[in-house]
Image (cartoon, rainbow, N blue to C red; front, side, top):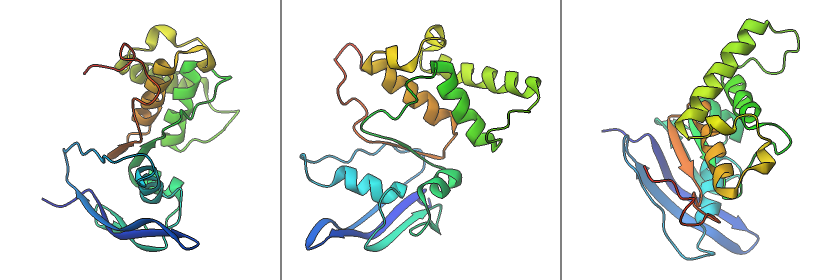
Length: 186
């Protein structure tokens, strides 16, 4: 079985400090892998290297065998690498539905087109509602994202990630700041 994601000797240095040192990992299709370590161990920095938020000092990031080490974060997303952040990354002034619709629209490559046909807009909304249903937020679709509880904001971020339809999902501290009642049970 070939890896979907692999890092080879991935390293980043900040001046004289080595934050991630020659990390090599292989992630196989259909597996769930957790990276565990104490605060300050470099887990988020490793995620930032893999997702392209930070440039590696040395080493490689491969997605389906393709070297993406020098690719930008958006290019990695287009190739199928999805990333949710430790802190929610939402458009707080937009509705729950509009946050997900924008992710659907980004995936389709439509960009911002004020003159797009209304029927296409309706299709994007229907797709967004399907993703909201998968994370149990369809009933809150018209609420501003800023009014959601922290747990529901995390679920909204998952819906946005699902809407991008990545091949690989990366979650950095997926339950950070959530109460026991807010942690989803699957």
